[in-house]
Image 1: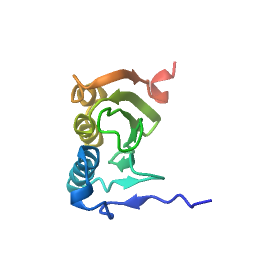
Image 2: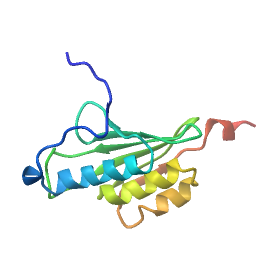
Image 3: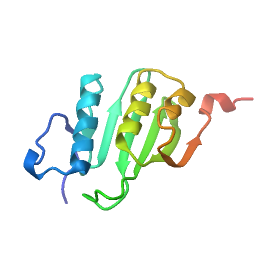
Length: 136
């Protein structure tokens, strides 16, 4: 069994002459997250990325499809707060998800963050109330 440890960006990628748009989109996502100070990492495989922001916030981008398929792009996005999962959505473009995740990790409201992905949402969003909001 292989050990599962996060691999932090920058890490080796396939040579430029072998990259397709699917690879390029992920590299752009990782470079943008890194430039913004979020220290992106991959878990298990390409297409499974985790970012950490301040105030207990984090975000996941998970590719849902056949790896390397350049015809269909589906990404499941999780926006997490200190009380757990705050929102989940599926988008058709990682670039749109990147904007939503960046705003969320910088402390933006969930509605503002989801608006960044507007026009690219293909499922959801599902927004959860924080546990602290359910206290009577």
